[in-house]
Length: 307
Image 1 (cartoon, rainbow, N blue to C red):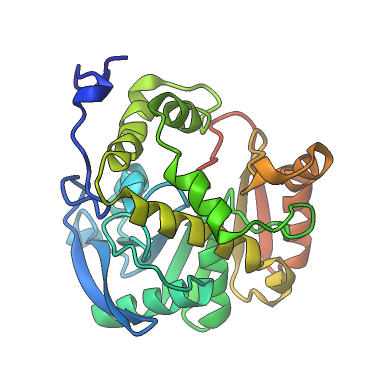
Image 2 (image 1 turned 90 degrees about the vertical axis):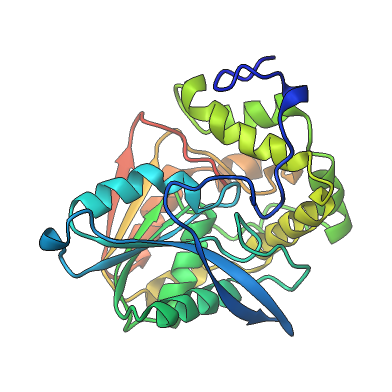
């Protein structure tokens, strides 16, 4: 099948390094060293100023990405925020995007601490935080660890509205690695990305799918697959749901009525899959537990299933 954006067949797509060396982000990317599990790693980030310094509101928003992508997919969110006077910081968490892909013990505490170190490096104090999908779990942990630093929290179709250990059998790291390392069929990847959208538009989802397809062509893809499996374990083993009642800042919880994603849901029984993917019911319960929360349900825009 030809690629609609380039006219190339899949066999002609160039390989993409697992740190996205050849991929252009929407804004300049910088790196900061972080020290995790006795390793010095490179954490990539975009630091985008307001479009007009004269209209800067002096506030900073941190965007935390989901499982399947890096910070590059926030391009339009960045544009909207900077146009209204915000400075926007968008890290690629370790294990994603242009950042290092180490074989380490991944934890949301670690990702949150790395993010705090990045903000310290940039001289940024208080921030508003938006977390999408898996980024919602990272944002929750960051907020719980830095209650005096976060002024507002937005959770957009967040994972972590349930404890996935209740209803999904545990999987070994070998099982998760084998699944990831063989997840290379372009048609499967394309269908996966298209399913993020209620009304899939190839002009929108094809470029996103192409990134994932090209990474599978890298000679280092097994390292990517290892990191991907380890971060699935992080999602499964480290619930944040039981601490929602400790979230201090005002919180906006946004869910899509058409979203039913469940990480590792392919290992769940149908009844458990339906329960864990009930974003309407789960978000209603979550909004009641978060002390200062407002919930918004998007009826039919897009299915935010980025993982």
